[in-house]
Amino acid sequence: MTTADNSERAVTIGLAGIGGYGEFYARALLEGATQHRACFAAAVDPAPERSSLRSAIEAAGVPIYRSLDELYARLTPDLLVLATPIPLHAPQACLALARGSNVLCEKPVAATVPEALAMREAEQRSGGRFLAVGFQWSFSEAVQALKADIRAGALGRPLRLKSMVQWPRASAYYTRNRWAGRIRDDSGAWVLDSPVSNATAHYLHNMLYLLGSETHLSAAIQSVASECYRANPIENFDTAAVRMVTATGVEILFLTTHACPDGLGPVSVFEFENAVVTYSHNRDETFEARFADGRIRNYGNPNAQPDRKLWLCADAARDGKPIPCGVDAALPHLLCVQAVQEAAEGIIDVPASAIRLRDDGDAGTLRWIDGIGEVFSQCYERHALPRELD
Ligand SMILES: NC(=O)c1ccc[n+]([C@@H]2O[C@H](COP(=O)([O-])OP(=O)(O)OC[C@H]3O[C@@H](n4cnc5c(N)ncnc54)[C@H](O)[C@@H]3O)[C@@H](O)[C@H]2O)c1
Image (cartoon, rainbow, N blue to C red; front, side, top):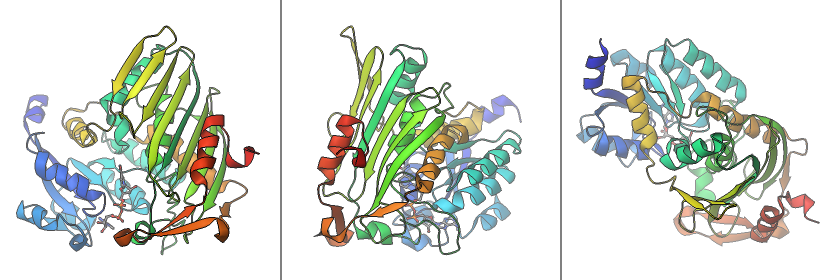
């Protein structure tokens, strides 16, 4: 097929996982595929009845298969989107690449680093197919513009970066599937689900991504210090404080919790030699740099086009344009996830006397750590981990 033919035809897209976050993709595909010269060709889900969009997908004439094997027995989509549980990312991405699809895999790229490396090998063996990772901020114009200025040296040398996010998650969050908050799933496969790897992973990845030496890379990590806490009755932790140093000596602080009474953030402050970049989700949701000479540059809102990752991948499947966030960009985040998980002290159980409970209706019971907001704001202020505060 010639390039001219390629530019005319609709890109066929398959979606694995139509419940949970997959509903975001299903809606985007149902509403926007034609406009983006794409075709929502098929869906895959062993439990489609759990998706509120099942009828809409069927009404649009999109077949829903029960497994990837059933899908590939009938067609090979140009792009397969994986919005499936974390332990399935590696086997499903490897299968899809081997069968000739490009892949957009949700974050985290995989549960473990060896799995991610196997995915990279599958990508390399795929004869030019790509594996993109769905950290949506990395596909946003705002992050790309900020990263371009950082790489060009416009802000000077990076000094230190910090981000904090407090997102309450009550019991229904952990009971919505069989893998939330787990270290391994029922079959023994690694999950390592936590706020570091999953819901708030974007804001840790973003700091590493912004410091990457090329568009498709993130900063390498030299060392990681962390404290992990558990207030919920889950296998893994729900609260973490992480401080990393990159290979070029930049300090990164990341504070995240689901065991908090109120939502806050993400908030970020990125200090450079010649500028300070700030971001606050609770205020104007844009990245803004204040330069030492008084100039201000606003880079825009990284949440403005959450579906841009999908359409950039559809374009890339059509015309081979490079994707901004693939497995290499996502690996440092995963290395951090594993380093935090392996930290010598393990997970610290919050004493029952410090846990508060709240009935959040349909969301279940919220368990939060008394004083977490105050401790985290002091850590944020002082670039410290909780135990360093005294
Ligand atoms: N980018 C974001 O902002 C964002 C937000 C939320 C979740 N996510 C990511 O999306 C992924 C899914 O998370 P979730 O919370 O929706 O999970 P979930 O378990 O709630 O839903 C997963 C969906 O996949 C389906 N599924 C299970 N096994 C499958 C299989 N073998 N083949 C096809 N489909 C299968 C389930 O039936 C369900 O519909 C995770 O990687 C998560 O980190 C990303």
